[in-house]
Image (spheres, one colour):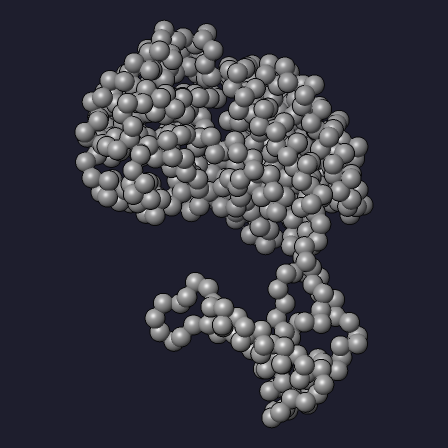
Length: 512
């Protein structure tokens, strides 16, 4: 059983995290690297224990735990450690307006302070530790709330995080709704929440009381387009990628293919081939197979209700088992937009398939009913079709002729838009999200004779001087298209003008 944190202790845990941050133990890059090193090796030493824990929690496939969680974390830690020193260096401002010509300006990254990270159950290792990696890399301390729905994994995470660091830089709060509500009362410097939109709103409201910024990683119904111009000679490869995405982790993936949109010209072929692949992947599947189960009885009953109410044709090769929350992967063909499966994110091993005739119409339907999904998948060999979908449907991320793999790319940002959340993380984007970019400007005292025109009394001469210093080179007319770049002549004239202005300012011979 997971040992819940005493509610009355939560406030002091947050206070302690603040004190540790104020002690500057993570001020140096070297100390941050040392803590990330410790985390890397403790994960390496506990791989089997994490696989065991999630197998107990919801029959999580060991293969999925290894490949979809631990492998990504090892890669991300190494990547962050390799680049952390360069990310942390102050960056010189590369362009200075003439009026700032005597200054030296840099942008430095400073930690935000104490970060609250609330993690979900579906990928409880990577969705916990990936943001923690970024928070530590940026020099913050962390208060971490793992999911109570995966008690074995959360217990192991608690033990690992409380023992592997040289300083108490990560505090863990375990519990359910009561503990989470209490945890949202103190002020944090940033909150990251991964989960449902409903809870995301609660977190955002609590954060707003302290003007605390929030990263929300939510979900939604991620569509997959299979157009008439997809490569039908590779139909098995295409559908294998789609079916894997829909049913890995028993469909409990925020970027899973939630529903499939198939052009009418290839619809029958897609259904036929999808059935073959489903049988190949999951033939005679049972609750004892190497297949992840739904997280709890509530999810099981919700999904069974959806399967009972759908009007589509169901195709599966197994039988549900209530005692273990097992539901076999199920295709649902001939689905309409008002079907039970199309009302909200399924988050279960079911894949509705909808036939369409016009790409423009189906994109419009997606925007109307399920706009701003966390992911969008396009299977088409036609660049114009790809671009049409990209231009007309906003989404957190996109894969073309692939599914879900963008999430594992820790060298690129991952995040939602609109109803699927806001903010990015992974790799450098995590470092940036948990840092503040602070401008530091240095002005030499010898420059006083150049800048004193800004002081009272305000005169016409001083105003003219400052306006001349601030005036830039305009390379566009009042009408017509703005040129993408200035011509060589414009550049020469501009540079000459700047030099003349500088010279005039320095020798005090401005003419008015």
